[in-house]
Image (cartoon, rainbow, N blue to C red; front, side, top):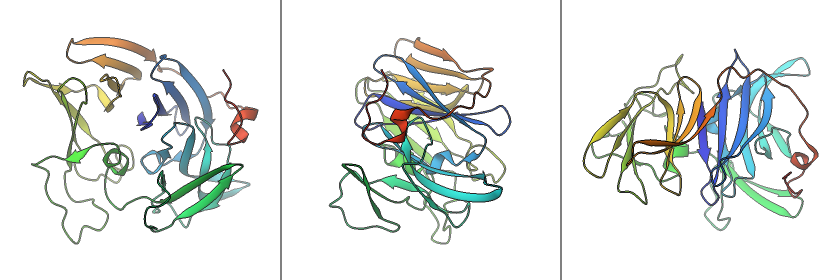
Length: 269
């Protein structure tokens, strides 16, 4: 599993893979604890090349698979947690970067910039940065002092073992991501991280069960475990505040609801 947390709303988008090559997307309301199940899709979703808009409504996706009898790679924008394309485009191949949302349209134009009208909503996206952990770096993670420098010839940032850290805004703890080197056949897009948390007391705890971890705005530690649980933890108290069992889920292919087919439609209650 992997998650992307919205920067201005209490929402996280969770990507869950399995069984086999199925992906399932879920929208996690961090203020209420509600999980909104979304699309099941039998295509490869390049989750680290996706992005979630700051309000948690829109998904910039990057995926590949069979469409009308042909293998294709394409990107687009949908309503999270669905993949019904509000707009889509063909990509050259699986080596593309994917796109991120540009919340401030006045910033200097970057590579692959697209300005898109979705009804009365104007959306700007542009190609992701070249480098590992782009989603994390846009969400407050920084390279730790002991993180090795990127070699000038390491164009795709594949040779170094990246070490990132992110302080919690509320409890004095620091979350660590130890990235390891790129593995072509491993993890998510070749990345297999492990996580540690340093408490305000100085104690360091390894999160050996975590496939993905991140802070939410309330200072809870969000964790997707390797055995299929989604949790919100109070690390200072050593307590699990919220748990969702995502083990043993089976594909349930269905059409996107009507609200997910429009950028402006009201989301179902």
